[in-house]
Image 1 (cartoon, rainbow, N blue to C red):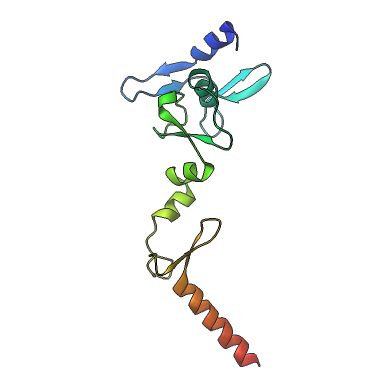
Image 2 (image 1 turned 45 degrees about the vertical axis):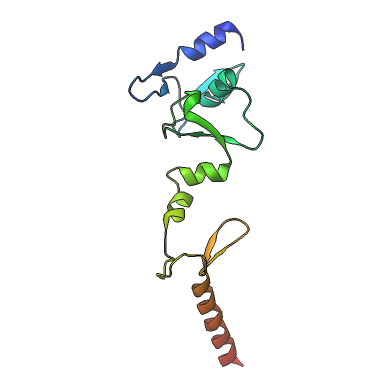
Length: 143
């Protein structure tokens, strides 16, 4: 990136002394992330800043905003993590499910009663047993 582009990039950053966030004041995506255009292409501003000041983002990882501010480009507020970790840390459906201590039928998620699939999805063993019993009873009654 040439000096003029770097200057144009940093002109779109406003530092909040209270939070330490480097707020992007340029264009933003619909999701609230900074958007920077260079070489006729759009780039996500926090990724550009991280690569400028820290280095490459490791393959397969994405940057998590530790400050929870999507418009922040402060590399000290960014951490490379897996997509799964990023989703579980944020205000997302998977993170809300992770906080649940009981299944929808009221059975506790604990080591004895919880099955975790290869995809990391939790299932209640008691509910699975009940479904199997119900299925068996329906099939048995038909025969």
